[in-house]
Length: 429
Picture 1: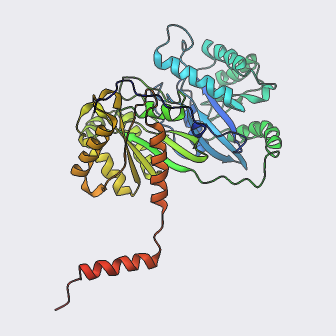
Picture 2 (picture 1 turned 90 degrees about the vertical axis):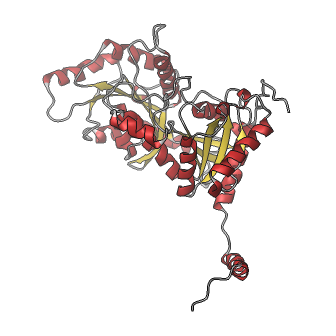
Picture 3 (picture 1 turned 90 degrees about the horizontal axis):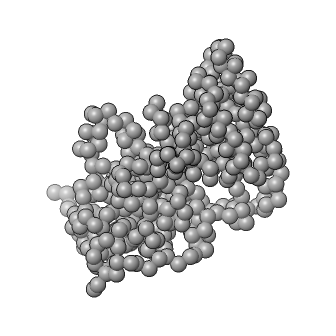
C-alpha cells in the first residue's frame, strides 16, 4: 500500500485532558525558582527525600520542569523543580535552551500556589536576582499576598558571615518580606520554610474542604517512556499531553531528568514518566570512562523509571529500518523486570510505507530477535502531529489490565495437569 506522507492529526478528545479540580482534588503546589546552580534541585531532593532530580556543580543541569508529591508536616504538596534562569533568558540573545527554561519556569510560577525564590548566599544578590524578582511579581498576576512568594538565601550553613548578613538585609529591597537563611545541602532552615508554607497552606486547605471528603482516586497507571537518544520520546510525551511539557529538538541528549507527569486518559489516572535516552552498554561504559557523569545519572534515572513502572513504552525510530542493539537491550531489561511492554514505532510519516506495513515489519523483527518477549503490541506513531497517540494510550491501558490480571489457583492447576499429561515428567529409576 502507498503511505501518505501527511498523516491525519489526532482529533481533540476529552480523554486527553489533564486532571481537573472537578474530578480530582489538587495538591498545594510550590515552585522552586532561581538562577543556575543556587541549589534548587538540592532543596527539591531534600524535601522529596529522594534523589529525584540530578544534582551537579555544572550550571544548567536541570532543564525540564520536575514535580514530586510530598507530605511535609501533614501538608500534601506538589513540589516543582525548575531550570536555572540565565542572565539573558528573557532577551532576544538567549539560546533556545535558556528561552525554553525561562518559559517553563513562568508556567510553574503561574500554576503554583506558592513560589520559593532561591538566592546564592555566598555570591550575594545580583542584578539578575533583582530582574527576576520583578518578573516573578508580574507573572503572579493572581497573587494578592506577598506570603505567596518567599525568598530563600541558600548556602548559609554554619556561622553567618558579615557578607551573608548583608545579603539577608539587602533581600528586603526585593519587596517580599524577610528572607530565610537556609542550607539545602545540610538541612538548615527547613523548619522555617515549613512555617512559611503553612501560612499560605491553611487558606488553601480551607478551600479544599469544599470538595467531596469521600472522594477516592483510582490508583494511577505507572507508565514509563524509554528508548535510545533522539528517537522522539519527549516529542511523544508532548503529543500525548497535547502541550509542550518537555524540551525537544534535533540535538540528542536534551532530556536529563526523568520527567514525571500526573495525567488522565479517559478518566483513568496515569503517572507518565519521560526518560533520557539509553545508549547501549558499551557506549555507556565509554561515557563513564570519559567522565560524563550527567549521562550516567540520567541513564540510572531511566532504569529506575523502568523498575517503578507497570507499563513501559519503548519508542523506536522507523527511519532506521532495523532495530538497534540498544533497543533490544532495553526490551530485555523490561522483560527481566517483569513489566508490560508496548512498542511505539515512531516517525511513521518518514518510513515511506503505510502504517500497517510498518507495524508488521517492527513486530516481525521483535519476534525474530527477542522471541522470549512473545508478541508485544506495536503501535505506529508520529509525535509531530499526534498520529497514533489515541491507539497507543488505549493499548497501554489494555496492557496494564492484562498485566494486573490474576489467574485463579484452580484454573492454574487445571492448566498444569493438562501440560503434565501432554509432557509427563521423567520417572525416577
